[in-house]
Image (cartoon, rainbow, N blue to C red; front, side, top):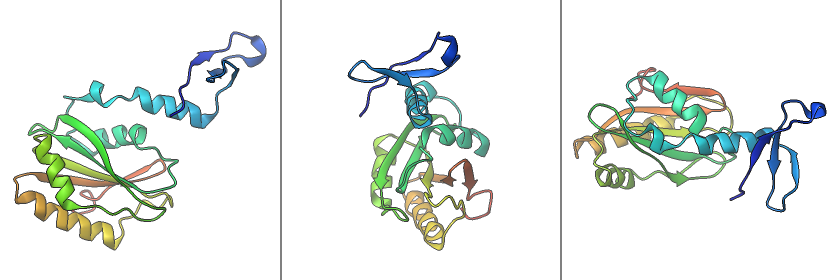
Length: 175
């Protein structure tokens, strides 16, 4: 993983430019991608642990920063929460290809139990930029909801992230 050192340039020609110092010590203006990488690292789940995620808007705000919209492959993640919907952990246990990721309800259930979660929000990205639920997304959500109910864990929502768009399947009546 690339390590970055960011600073503002005091040179009037580069007024307010954000700079990167690479591993070799060279300094250059930071690219948009580098700035976002650092920003995502700063959105630390530990700092958010214990905060209530009690609305789709709160979850959307978290996901816009945490799930990298420039990914070229699907990632399926989950926000594990307690009975008051306070964040316990954010995990990304599944990685896929350009248009699909294999997700295993058994593994999600294991992680929910391991973290003593009362509920989860499932999330995955669509690198295509289309923020609509596919039939596979809908089917997985139904299967996962039923599987988690057997162990007294609630699936609260399934979010799809496509660039800046974040869609709540619960708001669309699909959970």
